[in-house]
Image 1 (tube, rainbow, N blue to C red):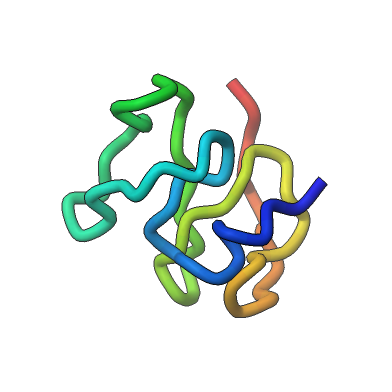
Image 2 (image 1 turned 180 degrees about the vertical axis):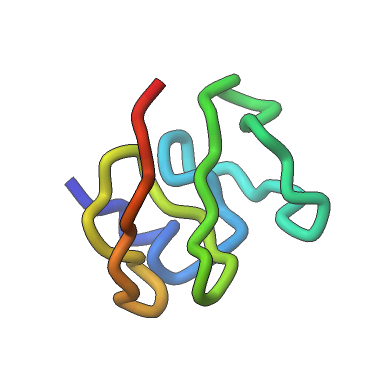
Length: 66
């Protein structure tokens, strides 16, 4: 399932859709406490297990679920 708010806002958590401090590159969301993954191409937040970035469509290679 794709979250429409996170696709529009690269700084919104892909799980709870709360705005994050993306410039700080937080390792987890302060609101829901889930791990955050960042697109290597655009820096936008990407949900765990996503094959492509919802912001720039770059392929998410090497992303591992913990």
